[in-house]
Image (cartoon, rainbow, N blue to C red; front, side):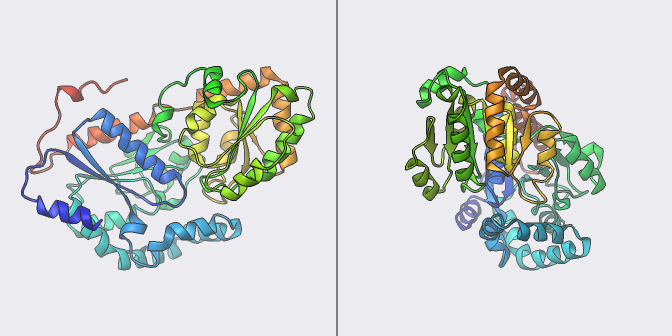
Length: 416
């Protein structure tokens, strides 16, 4: 953030024409950055020209070692569930969590303080579980806590780690009542809690075109039911074995010529090459990393995925029944009953069982439509707008010294 610091320092005496928001996240999984970018897009749309937003990876860009390597450590641990389970449990023990927080403050306090002094934010928004305590501590040490609002946007779905929650926040947005209960147990008052859903990417904010049109655009068979199989952005989640099992099972069914499979491999190029070289009994479309996931979901009738909260939220918006194939112990554990108990999906690690479920759903159109209707009813496509609008209300209601009042006629049309 050195360039940002120099730019702001050089223009320190210039009049401020925009309110500034520092969005704190870290690339520990793809969901946090996606949530931050979604919020920025919504703020830019709702308050055009009125807000300047800086998305910053607190750990990769600001924190001191060893926290600076946290994104890389996460990628390693996510592939070893037993290790991630241990880290999750370590962070839930009050004394060990406090020790980690003290060490984090020791090595990262100065860097975060410098970043705040450079950017001069009018609000801080966290979309990561490890950005609460350190940031609030720095604000208090700087004597700026009363002037700068602090907001948490929780991006976990069926459960959440205690580090997400701090009683000193001005707003805490959560996606479900289950997460709200955890927040209350951690000392967050009902007066600052808002149950709104998860922030999702802009392409999910609006209704999609009809399924057949989207299939034609993507080069799929227009009148054939399709299953979408994805892992995380890095392609983890047993995608290969599941894809082969599903294609084999659909190929053995009476409706084999009327079914198709879409596999999104993410950044896993080896998996993509392997699947492209495979001869499948049904049409199989293989893609790598895509930036039009909304269209792929709109083109399909069901989805097989690991239990990432963002993917689940987006699948619900598109009305997709969900088969969960894996989850990270701790943070994603609660996402499994969130899906299964609501009657919008199932869970299995076994590729053969997953394949059988897909075939069963495709053979029972009435059941598939009922599950799709339930899923769509649970979707929250306007959640990002709701969060951004509430953030804007809080931001512009604060009397920040030296800042021009940017509320104008164009900002009064924010109800939907």
